[in-house]
Length: 191
Picture 1 (cartoon, rainbow, N blue to C red):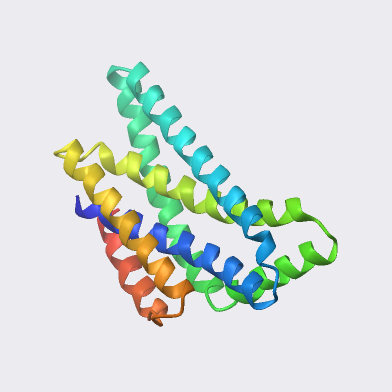
Picture 2 (picture 1 turned 60 degrees about the vertical axis):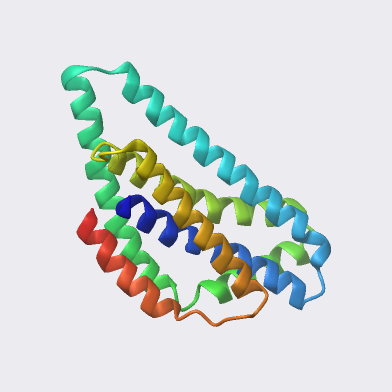
């Protein structure tokens, strides 16, 4: 439960931050009519991530014996590599990610490309969604209780959604640097 909670909380907050930055910037420049494109991109990415998880699950159920062990082992190793790489990537990118997203929004709006706004949200959310699915799949093979594992994941996403709403409405300033540092250490240890 702890693993799935930490993974979904961390990745969910990253997703919430990207969506919050995009929506907040659109609000600040008076372009709230483009919120729909951001939500469409984020929703499509979420659906694609769920489909990716279903493919992993179906594939694992079709395999048996050594093939299943090899598939699960490869998935676990791949998840650890991706997780470790993403922790370091996020550390490097965290300072400029908001500025970069705002520049991409400006570029999309200046070209009149509404599709680019959806693709911007889609690409950012899909990256985090695929990571989440990969980590959860790899971690689920060691879970003692499926119900507790998925409950932890659901709780992590729920808290991340609330945190995103609180950040968007400006009710709180979250110490993100400290949160990501602590969660990175914990998630790497768990991985």
